[in-house]
Image (cartoon, rainbow, N blue to C red; front, side, top):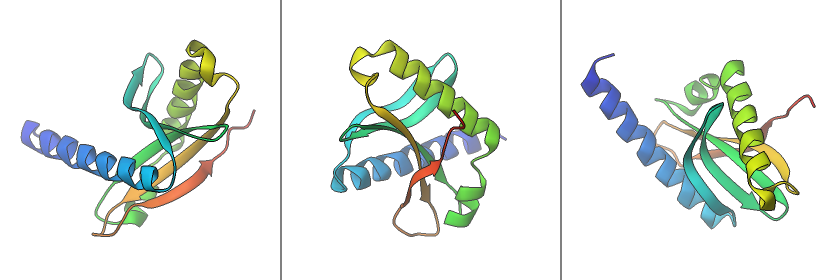
Length: 122
């Protein structure tokens, strides 16, 4: 992929994340962070609602169906590890229940929020 295409994709992704942040705020979520990079993975949006800590993966594609298909098993595992890493290092987060959500952006529609999009096995 050319440098210009990567930059355009990065801008499109950042715009989609900003839209998702506002959508989550309207739904009563408190945004704790964006683009959190850890040694074990990245979290697009870190949010809290009540006693639940949520790692939100934002995917933007031409359609929401294509966005959903773009979240693979390896990526889910990296997000799971990243949330565990964040929770271990922030004392105030350790008592919260983790959850993994997806937000799908595409097709000229509002973001589709999928709470509890996947579960961990342990």
